Picture 1 (cartoon, rainbow, N blue to C red):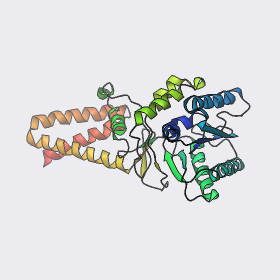
Picture 2: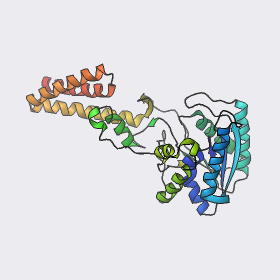
Picture 3: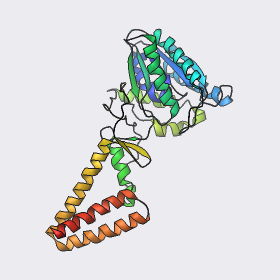
Picture 4: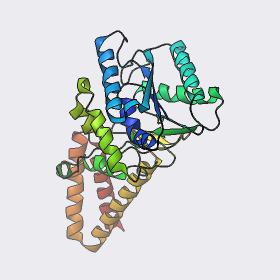
Length: 316
């Protein structure tokens, strides 16, 4: 198995659970680090994080793990790549050499498409190119999402519903706070292992080795069970922005159905009982005004649906 990791901690977050099974079955894990996790590999923090990563893997899997570093400078989250195209070409060549030495039908684990960090995206593209360059048709390319801004009702409906309800103050205290695996954009949802509990325990234990990055924070954000799937092409598809995130068509359809349901229910109430209809109308208008003033567009759209339903019920 080869894990293509953008930074020192990424290999644990994305690959510890899969590596647990590979080592248990007598396999070997190779890790390729694209960046040094700092602006320069000579910086002390770069050396500290490299050692932390090695310690995490050695303590869990002993000599069943080997490492290779390209030592590219780390980029800033949300910013442009901090290295030249020639550096990426060098990393592709390094990966191609590693892939060529893998056993038959070995797994190459890479970041999923549309990750928040540009280094993750470039590590993914470099790995795909390296596998093609190696000429190995037997290699199993597998991807997993680490952190992104993707919303999908197909992949994580609870997260979408919680974000929508959080726009209403009355619901905020009731919503569950949980650490969840991020969604893929398009394609199948991926799968988790049936023995996830044991694999996840190993992952959480390994995250504790990264003292320079606060193990408590890492475990809080990344202690979810990873989902894996064969690499899915990153095709262009319908999407829209909401809560500064990218939502796919399933979220659009869900929101449309919710608004249609609210409008239909308001219409039915207005036709059934004029008093209830009047109360609903007042509630809808007040909610609409408050939402517009506070620039909360989700509550304002919901309020509009209520008002529209009540007015339509009164007219019809």
